[in-house]
Length: 267
Length: 118
Image 1 (cartoon, chains in turn blue, cyan):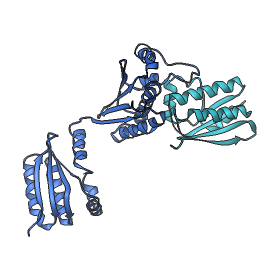
Image 2 (cartoon, each protein chain N blue to C red; image 1 turned 90 degrees about the vertical axis):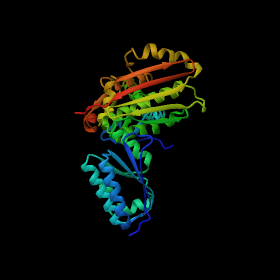
Image 3 (tube, rainbow over the protein chains, first blue to last red; image 1 turned 120 degrees about the vertical axis):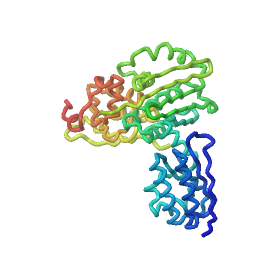
Image 4 (cartoon, chains in turn orange, purple; image 1 turned 90 degrees about the horizontal axis):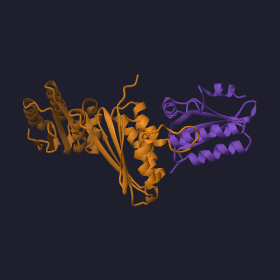
């Protein structure tokens, strides 16, 4: 039976060890032979991670899905992994009705599948960057977002809460003491790995608070937290106690707080 | 933006001078002023004792903790008390780390806090 399916197999340009199998056209019973040959070759070559890019697949029959499952099994028996990526909504809905989501790991796109390989197989950290205008009302969504990401990346509920607190306190400090010009965004850069998260928050200094920022590097990280009922001044002390390392970089223009928090095993 | 915290009020049985306040949500820098106003309003209305129920308080940061300490001090100055109950583990850790657990009156539950009222 003839098939309209085209198959391209190439190593990823950006991620060593990942192979991209791009399928184009209709996946039907006529495609099975070509798919099988491709999987046999990929298995023989000991490819550790194969991403089946379904972005250009117009339809998929149950028999072709069965062949993809067979390919997955073949690769996994040789220590490899096969994932699906880039399916359109209709195709994904249909395949999920056939139970594909119970068998395959499915990523929204190729980039997500490659990032997952970085994470799971190479243990490389993932990076997130965001900027927001220096307004205190904008720190809750930032802290919620990063706390949620930490939880999704395997940090415990308690650690995710600590990370949320760290982000909140450092961002609040940047907003409160940094420039309040709408053009001077607070920049948050996060590197999250299997065992630790690194959070870097940078603000443009408010010239009126230069002495405050200068004093941070000399005083706050060496002094105990304030006691009694003082309403302010505990934030960075709290960060210091929740984090494993806090570093501080000051210039006349801007201030950067860099926090490292390791994953803690909860009892 | 919706407020991230709500305060729910309830009378304390046989204690006209006391009020139970349930904190719902996150207590942080975006809403401390509002909470400060509302709780101080209760003190000004003549309630000497405030029992805070934190069952539904998910989050508190250092600024939020600052006003809790302020409530404690303000209540004492008026001859009353500010008592906290049902603190979740995450929030309690923040209170403890910052050294405020000895400065605040913390109880396991509302009943224990109410029973301790003088």
